[in-house]
Image 1 (tube, rainbow, N blue to C red):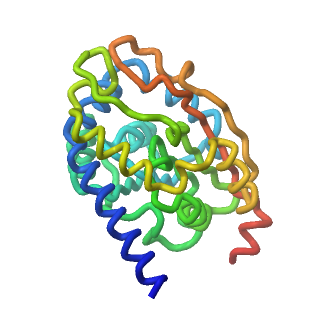
Image 2 (image 1 turned 45 degrees about the vertical axis):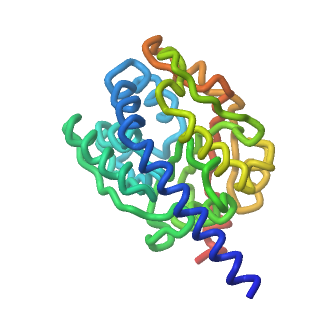
Image 3 (image 1 turned 45 degrees about the horizontal axis):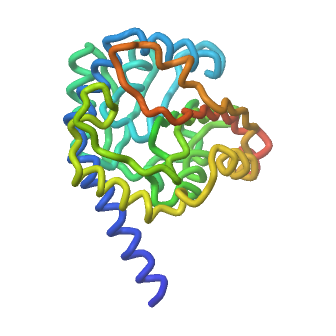
Length: 255
C-alpha cells in the first residue's frame, strides 16, 4: 500500500510539472529563439565541441529539449538528433523552431526518467536546465547512462536552484519578467517537493555519476563562456557544466 501511495504521489507530481512547462512553453520558446538568432549559440557550440566524441556524425539525445535549442544547434552541425520532453507544449514549440531555422530532428514526448530506447543507442546525451526539475534525478542519470554507448558523453548544464526562491518581476530586464505571480508560486512549490532540491550541486551529481560508471569533469560556472549576448537575460546563479564519459568497463558490465 505504501509503495502504491508513493507511485501515485510521484505521478501526480510529474503531471504537475508537465502542466507547469506547458504553461511556460510559448514564452520560453520566444526566449530560446532570440538565443538561437544571437551570438550565444556560437558560444555554446564552441564549448560543446570541446567535449564531443571523435569528429564524426553523432547520434545525440537531447533530454528535456524544451523549445529545441540544442536540437537546432546540433542539427545545424549535421548530427542526428532526437529531442524528448514531457511537455507537449514544449515539443510543439521545438517543432516550430526547427522549421523556422530549416532544421530537422526527431521529437518525441517522453519521460526523462523512463526512456523508450534500447541500451547503447546514443553517442551523446545532453541536457540543459532540466535536472533540477526532475522528481527522481538519480533514476534519470541511470537511464542516461544506460542509453549511452561505451565512451559516449553525457553533457549536463544546470544550476543549484534548491535553496533559491524565485520572484516574478515586471521589469523587462529581468529573466522572470511577465511570468506572473501565480506561475512563479507554482514553480517554487514544485521545487520544494523535489528531492534534488535538498542536494548541493554539482557535487552531488559528480559523486553519483562517478558511482554509476562515468569519468567526470565539471566546470563550476560556464555562464561567462556562453552568456555574452547583452540583449538576453539569464539567472544570476552559476551555470555548472558536467562532462561525463561512460567508461568502457562499466559499459561491458552492463551488457
